[in-house]
Length: 258
Image (cartoon, rainbow, N blue to C red; front, side):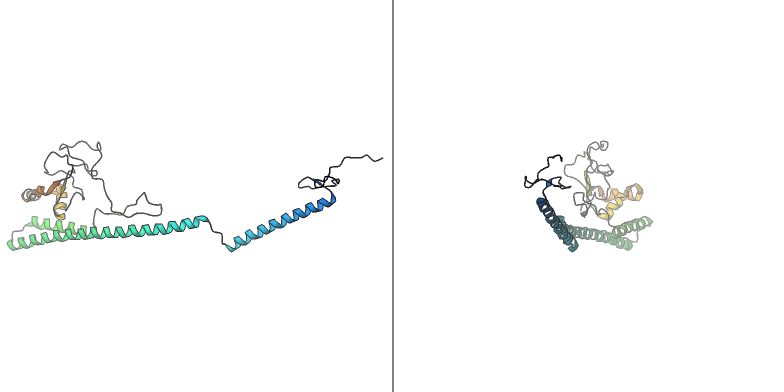
């Protein structure tokens, strides 16, 4: 006699006996509901195929637009505008600087021309004057061919791909304690460490001659004292120097004003 065994009911109707177990969801179904279950799975499969085909079409069309494209485009336009503005300003500043340098060179050349004419007329020039004029003309030629005190530097505050062009600026005075205190109590130049409380107001050619003080001979010393060049040195605002200018101060290129 056959033994009666309990069967799992159909998960759908809870009445008919579950004669088929789905290997996916592990549920029991009667024959009718198992067919419906398979139909549901077929419909889900169709929807997945449709999603696949849709994405594949989008990818093939190459119309995928990332939100960052818009940001990059805006950044590009803003960067180009900023570069153009800075470049325009830099060109204007460079032109101004070169024009000022040419004006100073013309003044220096005019002075030398007058000295040459006067000495030629009096016929009292010597080797010393000829050497002096030659040295001054060589310095002026070098300045004309390669102007100093100007450069192109990078601005660390700008974007990584944008470099700001600007005239190189230096801090005039060194921080306290950087150098040993000067005898005159003046403020140190941040570059050479000498007293920078004075600046020169004479011509560029004369300033270059003064800068070469280490190579002076007796003729140069005589020229210094007879020419009263020390009178062309002026104190800066907030000066601390307790003496008068007798030489020995800052001789950096930028320590001259006109």
